[in-house]
Length: 208
Image 1 (cartoon, rainbow, N blue to C red):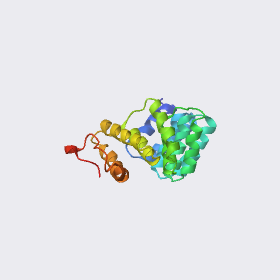
Image 2 (cartoon, rainbow, N blue to C red):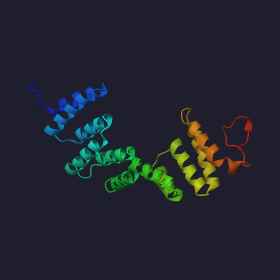
Image 3 (spheres, rainbow, N blue to C red):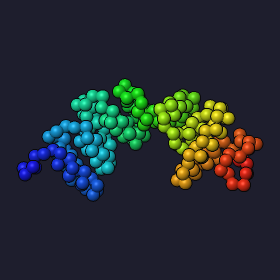
Image 4 (cartoon, rainbow, N blue to C red):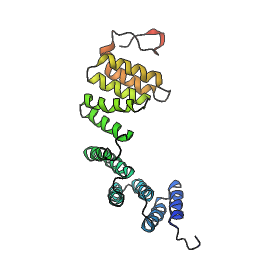
């Protein structure tokens, strides 16, 4: 627009400033776009800017305002949960992730984060339900099988734990295979000291 009245162009300019690291200029553009046209994207982009400017409380306040305008918008709820998690307020973070289920019962991020929270709250059996649910939804990767293996181990389901770690190693890439071996070594060597080796260990050596 010749008069610079189109909120969409302001949003695009805000994105450009964001990518350039000019966060104050980006903030001005998103603020102007949001004032002119409240959209979910404008709330999300402006919140990202606040986080980059180390203003998490401003981001949380913005998410609250966004949820008043767009009640039930999952991306805004998840955004608030992430900021609370970044602040170390895990109870509030879990509260928002649970709120996601009211609108999207198959949200992978919410299920995974609640499962992780339950695991670190010494409830591996409860955490296992979340991770198995992801498996039933079709999620299949190294991280998931690694987490299931840990849950099974601390729930004293040792044979199942071994199977899951084997699966995690088979799916692993060079970038994440070390994480799996770390968990095997840090937590499980004592139990598996007399077990046959997991495929992938050189020379047919044994754990322990």
